[in-house]
View (tube, rainbow, N blue to C red):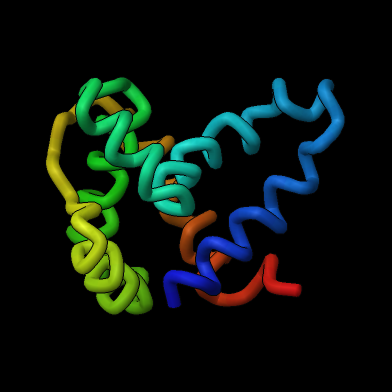
Length: 115
């Protein structure tokens, strides 16, 4: 499941390869997933307690709290916890952004961007 998520994330990000596309909202909200796809970067951002790290933690917490709406998140969160990527609530990310990010993560897990 982790591999599917990461490959889907990279496939999704290919949509934004040209410079102008990187200003799009959809690109900006997806950037947080880089910390999942690149565990070394996750550890660096966690050490810095960066805004991106806090956003990811809020998202993971949101995902955990909404497993009933997104059933695939249960197994996915378990795979992340085995990599020491765990939900922590910081309360820095607006709920509408968290919902959009969770919808996108769900699409990754449902193979929408799988090649």
